[in-house]
Image 1 (cartoon, rainbow, N blue to C red):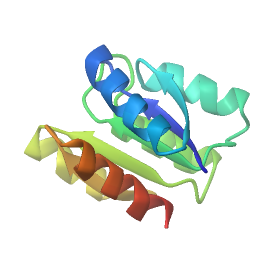
Image 2 (image 1 turned 180 degrees about the vertical axis):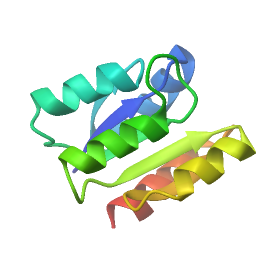
Image 3 (image 1 turned 30 degrees about the horizontal axis):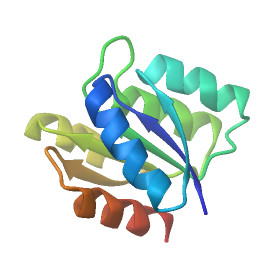
Length: 119
């Protein structure tokens, strides 16, 4: 299906989400934070179909990652996740951010958001 770069500093969220998306047939690459994700994106020359990232992370947050990814790989969609309302507004302002999913989410919530982002 699609290649998704999943970025979250919470290992349990990363594992839970990666497992669900893999079961759905997606290839999932993971990173612990935005800086690691950007390195992975550069190494792949932007060859992913979607970046799925938490917003609040150390070193480089999801909004900064979305800005950097959009600058280097225009058209690459980013789906953000957050449990913080004020962070949600930051992400929604970016053109390449297709949606901001509220945490906590269910498997069906994240699967549906990924489907919409990839459509």
